[in-house]
Image 1: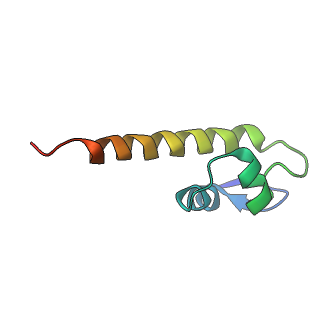
Image 2: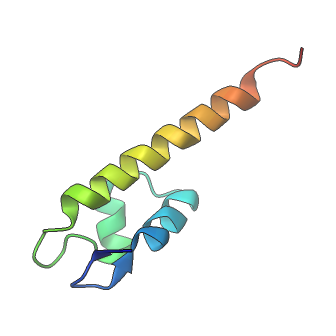
Length: 68
C-alpha cells in the first residue's frame, strides 16, 4: 500500500528501510522523501516506524532470553 503518494513510497519500502537501520522520521525523510511534500503521510509513516521498532525490540528480547 502506498503511504506517501507524493514520492510513491510504500509501506514495504518503509519497512525495508527500518530493517536496514533507519530509526527516526528524519532518517526516513532523508532516505525516502517521506513527509517532504504535502505531509499527509507523516502520521501513517510514523505509526509504521513505531510498530516496526517495537517488533524489533520484541525480537531482541526473545533472542536475549536464556535457553530452557
